[in-house]
Image (tube, rainbow, N blue to C red; front, side, top):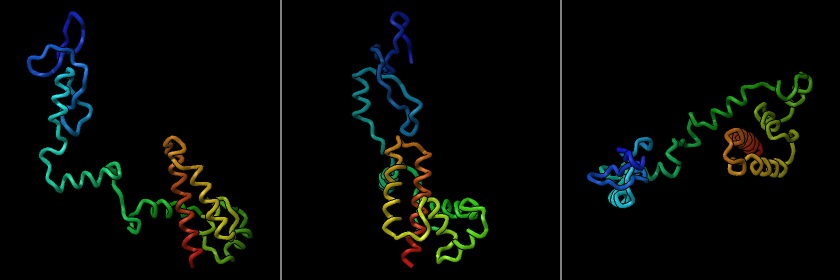
Length: 179
């Protein structure tokens, strides 16, 4: 990158070009931090010849396209043992009924119902009464999804985490109600 001392502008990085370099061009395809400046004529030439998939096999291109569908973030099968949601739910359920009530009598009454501790925790997460009809659970879940969805909250990670926990609670109750 060269500077023209008289006008203090960046000179095009193309061979033997003295025009002003106003446009960024990447030096490497996987490094967006390193780039060079080119003039309009040479950035057009650069873009015309740019091939991100150059030197990649067909399998590599297909893997890239497949990965692009999930923004190049790793995904897992929902039934896997190390599934993120399953781990998150299990960690959430490790907390005892203390969050629901410190009163042992009340906790014992809740346990006498046909619902497991996991179910009771899920009812608490959804802020609904234990043992309500399925339609009430479903309606509450829909309201919470609309309220905490990241798209509605500018992608805020706190809302995203809350929505994950709500979804896990709903899934827990769905399984129990199917029994």
